[in-house]
Image (cartoon, rainbow over all chains, first blue to last red; front, side):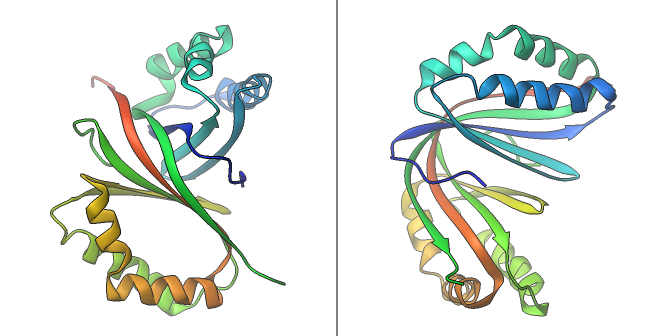
Length: 106
Length: 106
């Protein structure tokens, strides 16, 4: 689970329904996370799927999000996603304005 | 899966790790969704859990988010969440600035 950061920062909410996955799908999920981590502006990512999938990646600025969108591996995955993996998805670019955290005291 | 809306609008990203759930937990998840739907400013909600849970609710404005935070059932659930259900959570209030959608043509 990602940590809190200093607001404001940015996020990409990727909500999806799968169509047809393959070996490359799992492989590229890992590649994309590894490659995203190489950007100094990348802060972290959370993912979950219950039929519907939600992934949220967090970024220091929108310039890094734009650069990431044009990364070679990411472009390949975007095309493959449209050609095969996804039935439907929505990408939302958001600005995190406020946040708070609860951690249970053990 | 929620639809696209007209930007800008607002979202609440709730990321959580569970501690100890009970019958009331499932019951309140349903109550909260039903009650949220009664607000004209409520647009929709997506949820998924793979160990880590991510729920994103969407709202027309921040005033409705503030009102929802003070709803009696929601306050009860917030307290119960801290007392029992959650190990950890982060609530992020975000502004959706841009979005795009893909829908497979059948």
